[in-house]
Length: 191
Image (cartoon, rainbow, N blue to C red; front, side, top):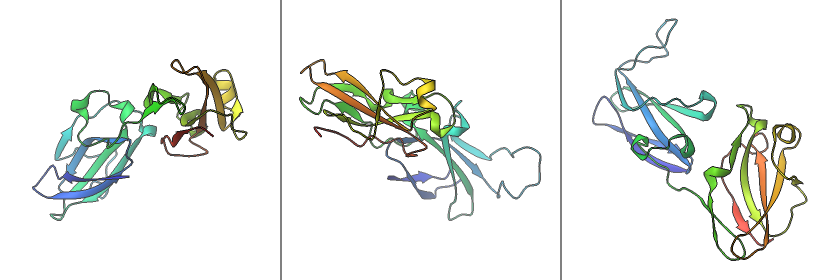
């Protein structure tokens, strides 16, 4: 988790907000009065905003409602950094973007965000790379590819790849977000 001091869009005050290290805050709305207390068919328009309202699936967005010391209501929108490509759209975060390395020779294999697979908004159909190991893990079902038919059947899947630098066989271990709701990479290891 990472803590940010987020400025209220309506005044000089700031509030403390905690988000996962891989999340970015990309949009902030400020309201003079509680937007949930208004009886209306539609959501009220904010009195002030910061950032851009991006087209990100609501299933992948976290919003936190806080109040500043001046009694302004603030809604803070955050999501995984892979959904906010342009750095200028990132108001706060991420604190860390994970790079993947071979556990044997430390060769750079790429970015973790390239190994988050979303077949559907259902948590059981979203797979995240958790570890890269040199030996297969019996808890993960070995597969040639993660497809929708495999994704709907198994919570934990593994694919093998060869390191382009040292030639060792690597096991990429994925679990779906039903098994673990985070989108975090744990480690690369030789076990």
